[in-house]
Image (cartoon, rainbow, N blue to C red; front, side, top):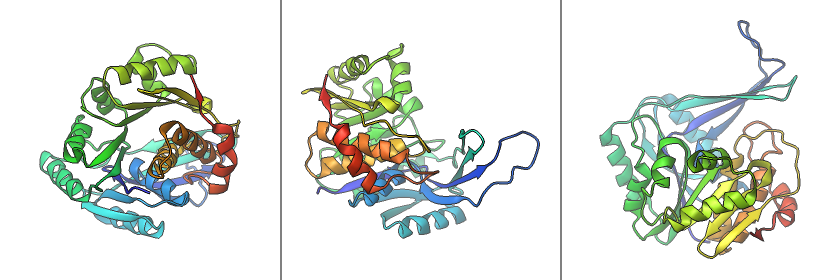
Length: 314
């Protein structure tokens, strides 16, 4: 297994609770919250750990909440490279309305970074890069971090490690415009892909056409687009594949995308080709939606769903 480093500049303590009904203007009495370490890269590391792998998590931590988050990460058995973030580490809240099953997700922005802290983070990442390994940059960027931060990370890595980026908004738009030369893997969801394409992507083949166009333009060597219950599509220079698992009941969608990335990267690190790793990612994402709140997945569910998630060529 090759080494894996995940990057989380905007982590959070994830709180998840239930309430009978969400109504305005009154006190809503919630259940005892579930508390988990959160943020894209941390969730990827959590998924890798759950599935029997190992990774190192670069995490920006600030204030008392950052100290509490560090303790949660350590309790999860994840090795961390701690970096001093500004202000207090953020919290996020997921509330499930038990009367309807609807989820309400409240995401705070995190403290603002300045240019000096960005440069310091890049220097610390440079020292943590695993030679011959994989680096995963996942999740939102804090206020003040420039949209071309993935390109900065890519320059730091050089040829020492492969880079997977899973982001959204302005950083994704920068990537799609070819803002990161030699990017290895780019992942996005179907809504983001449709926005970039300027049209709905109604079926897997249309999604594959879009992903292939990004590969052809040199945006990334491999492009993955998630399609919700319809699984995910992967395109690279060798071809295009679609993988979807058997239908599952959605209990909570929180962390499904990060679990996909964790399972996908873990399979790659163990020598699986991308289309086989795609099946692992899809099975991981499907397993994640079976769990409550901010829990990610159970290994036995991933193993059960994996045969149905085998990738087919498009």
